[in-house]
Length: 209
Image (tube, helix red, strand yellow):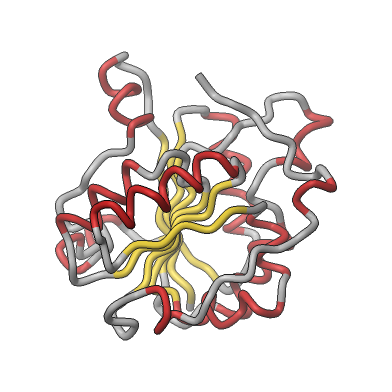
């Protein structure tokens, strides 16, 4: 079940201040991956535990899920994983978040809320302004991963990113997964459900040029 939360609510106007990378990761110079819409964090927990050569940051709009995920990090003493609460669009527009954006090696938008009604498209996480911010602050060679089981949403996300001339599609045959944030191609909970239900998955990778 998708649990929709309206990102345009005033509740999300206040931005969580994320500490400097050297305060949240044991080794802050490791490549950094950001997962937008990290939900309960299971995907990132699995990644962080299996691949200690990367740091992982999850952003989630449902505060309770973030609090639970942070407790799990403390319990398990994981030193390459951090979660932040808030609307991605608001966070990305905050000047204090720009340092993190410029440090990213990759970012994933996996199975975001589709907001099917046209009048609700403005609530979708991927917006032209957000992609423009990424195009300004992400370093050259950084990657954007898109994935969803909703074809119309995929077409919308794909069009929005491809419309920005600072990003171009990366042919998967040139993708070095062994060097990526997900070398073992771990699946999210939603993707596992989609595969089990024999549903289609749509995905694309973009590179900052």
